[in-house]
Image (cartoon, rainbow, N blue to C red):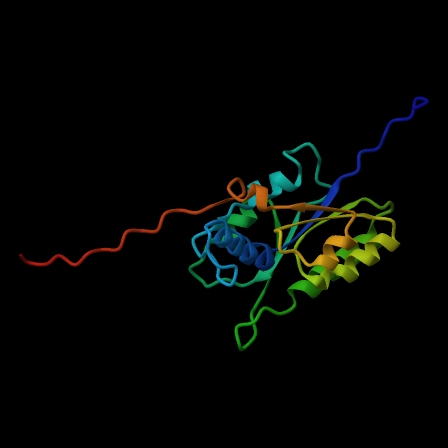
Length: 193
């Protein structure tokens, strides 16, 4: 290398929480031999382990704090605090009047576009999402000479998978990045005999 020091390129990570969480529950249901039409509501992602897998077991380094996008959970839910404790920068949006998620995909795409403008040199952008909506974002990253990785479940959009420089399935890691705690036993009514 003629005395030159090689620059290490960090990884910028962007996670669409609802997308990866919901489809993880679907993947868990399929793994249990059940229909892909339904979700395994007992499957819970461990975001620290998800990040560990995306960072290839800590063999790569983060260029910035990973960003996660999602909808506001119910007040008693502790998921966002837990995710924040794992080191993610959170962007949380209220659902609309009909309970539908809004603004998440657009905000994540705009933040990735802003990343392109701010960085002096192209790097690696890791998108943890599977929506076809992100194809345009990947195309813009490519025009700016960025490498794009998509990490998602096997049911990723075919167009998104093709657009990325690299696709990695989360399915082989399903037990490592998530758990399926046993259901709480139902309380039986005590009856007289």
